[in-house]
Length: 409
Image (cartoon, rainbow, N blue to C red; front, side, top):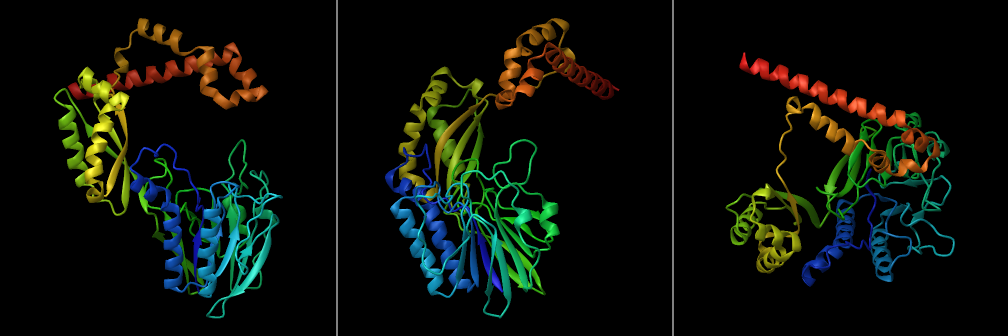
């Protein structure tokens, strides 16, 4: 028995902030989730899998474009025509609204808002029970795992769940715990919602497939799907990359000798050495910018240098297989010697930093809860935070003195 577990296709992702790319490259980026899905379908047919599980967020939003709907229908029909069963659950991005529901090809199994179970028979006559549900709204605050049945009379039992591990505070995405999942005695939990591929538990495998295509710089690394096979009545998974572009960071040091031209050459040389496996969208981080000339720093800040470099990129990006889409500037961080902080410095820092306004800004959304707001606005809370910080700095200072004494000895 063999199947594919995928999730978070996010077809129609907007890829905001990249519209300045050359038209050909922009089209490549915009089409990346579609091409990654095509790769999944091609692999499923080539591997002759028995079924494909799609665990939520097939689309990026609840209202889908005709292009995205038609594309997905055509791809899923190819799987059905190849004798591959498709099982779908909707997530918090493509939840099932009352006035608009997707019409996927006949034969696709779609879970409704309540947990139900579908049993299928594979080519090697294995009976597989698959339990799951779809979002009926953007949020599900309820733990849905108790609604899943115990292991049924089947060779394998699989759970499909689009959600997140239960945290303290708000839990809007079908919160669950690993212990309650393990207690169901399933053979595999196919998860969606978290975009990084991740194995939460070995036995039974509780697995996030991850998004099939990273959509921004906070989703770096390879993305794809899980290929799962049975062996001695256990299910073994293998991550398979299907992404068409990848986000990565290139970090370079600059100094007072750096000029517009030398920086362009430095970046070009570094890009040639990346050799990305798939096309890379690169964030360029420049460290030590305090040493740059005022003119170059201004051109890096206002986008003038980027515009000039983009002209060079347009001639070379197909060869280097990457594109620098953003330049981030960072000053070298001077290491603080806590032992040298005198009383005057501390008094100035205490007055400037430990203010009620700063505490409320740091607390952020926590201030919307009355009981927390009352606590954080109390003068004794400010005093306690100030004392705790002072003790931490004092401890660090003593540590540095001890380390300095050991070094001199």
